[in-house]
Amino acid sequence: MKTMLKAMQMQKNGISKDILPLFEHIVQTYKGEECEGKFIKAMEEHLTKEQRFRLFEHNGSCNGTGYDKERKAFALEHAEKPLAERLELFKKTFGRAAVLNDDGTITVNFACSHGYYKHAPKGKFKYPASVETYFERCAGGRLYEYQKALGIQMKIKSVDVSPLNENVVNPVVFTFEVVDHTK
Image (tube, rainbow, N blue to C red; front, side):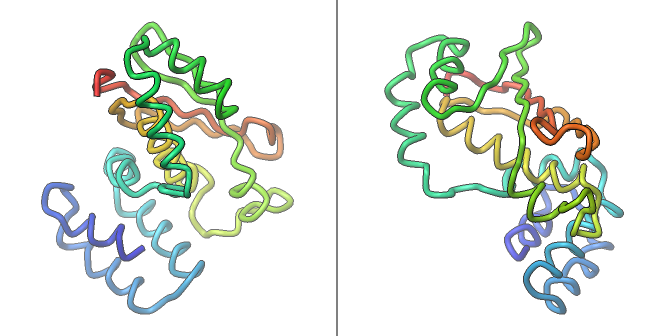
């Protein structure tokens, strides 16, 4: 959460200086999962969805999880192929499906077993923040993964969470706006 706090303190991210002491207090007072939960809950209460999306685009969960070499190698190997073809190859290689939509967005149905089984056992979410805010953070991780492997630049457009107890297989749909696919 210290990295997220530093990002929030950067003027370009447009976070009001009036609420920064709240986040500083959380980071200084709490540790581990308690800090994470309180920090994300405060983000939910004091930031707009768009502000959270911008922050999670740069500091989402699961960034740099040890697969960056494979992602970069994949991006280099397939750089000259059309984006739709790269997405199909990505699915075959990494096992994650994504759809390139007519409007230039990419839609990803995603089941986060870590989030569901660790933080929401028996339908009860462990963090005090909502499931939606948790998955907004997860969207940042997926965005990171796709950008690295596909060699593109994207932004989070939406995060749609189904009730977890109704759809454990694909509890969330991320929609990413493709900003630059020639990266």
